[in-house]
Length: 216
Image (cartoon, rainbow, N blue to C red; front, side):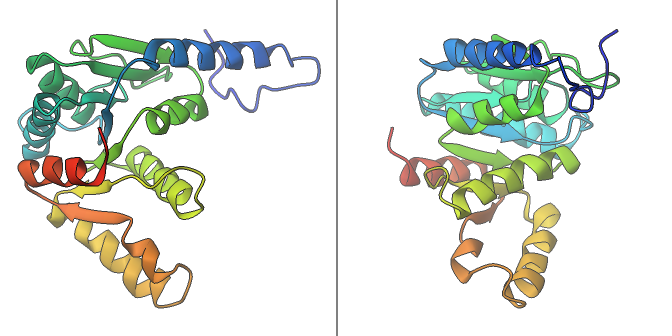
């Protein structure tokens, strides 16, 4: 069984692992270089198919495909499965960037292009490199990680600005209010940084906003 704590496992003389890292970058780029316009959709792997956020993710992905976008997810269950399902149902490119985890994730059946990663940071590069927008559904720590990774890269101008849309105002409004009342009020961020995040509920409005903000 492969060791769980991959970063901790780097030791003197094990620099050969760099070649495995390079190989994952090459595999990702070669598989995704001709993907075309795409959005990355994030959310909890624990979301059940009966939940409203699952159905919303499926609908949003379907609408994006009908508007000539591909859909990229983390390739697992829950929201990721829903988005891949919606994209596949609409006849589009349904990409799953799966991560090998010791106790949680296995690829869902709806991605028609599945790529396996061992390293989170390489997977993150693929999410942001090939996406014209980030769609953030309700989720946990992993979803927050992807959200703030994108926000930080936009804020520091390491990537071109892209829409970052938080879906489900009931779930996310408290977070944005906290960012304003604490981070902004205490001058930890600038007023313009608030504009990076948009909170929306309607799938049609989400797709329309992305189309208006990006060039296909």
